[in-house]
Image (cartoon, rainbow, N blue to C red; front, side):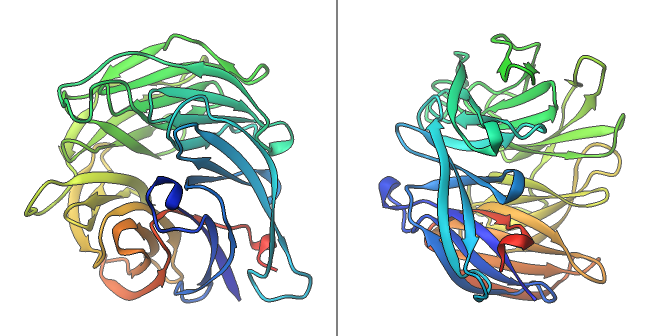
Length: 362
């Protein structure tokens, strides 16, 4: 049976070649990519997140940022991916260029990273974006005048129901805010600030390990590093330990490298998408800190985002948004990290890939 992936993109509204949110067919048995199906034309939905009951949240990376929620309504008796989209709600993101969002574990609150310099908290009663309730902003800068002249939050992550993590590329900071799930509001001031190395530019993160033994892995976009920090879980919410820094890439690159996404590949492993080198680098994190062990060539340009899904018999399927090549690339890796299959699908300026609920496929 075929499954679906939801793909976000940059559209003409921000100089991209995409069409909006698209559904892409994926073979459930082989992992191979098929054709593009239902497209919802909307402006630059560059980041997506799954909501409750098949809802799909999108951050529209515009000068006047917007967050929207939509649901796909399959055509009765139709083929996989046949149907129409219905918008359930939308709200301002609280700033310019929203580039990342996170769904609170309770499902009724969204946090949005606005690259323009703020974090918005959006109420989502019933699982749909409805109202901007709070804006968090913290001034600062870093040593890179071209990218760190001001605060640039690049990702938000709920470490637990009471703790929101903000990775700020512009200020070289990881900030923790306490969240009250009952009110949907966060403390204006962080309860912890962790300084990353100057010029690091923390971007996206991944969590590994179980309760009491978690670690946070942070892609340093500007200095091509991967930071690992212990997550110290406590009754009042999580805190972070001291970072350990490793190269994001195993081999040498002919020019600048800018890590984008970091994702869990499997037990004791994460994988980093390295733009510039256009490789996916696997890191061993079994000891808590990251150690690069293999570079996997992508064969396409500007891997902005990647998604990992399990592969029958071991290994993993990787789905990569190769933004500059207008391709979503699928790589099937075996347990030894060898590429055993590859497929591609043409999508304009893809930025994000998300497995779509099986119930929405038919």
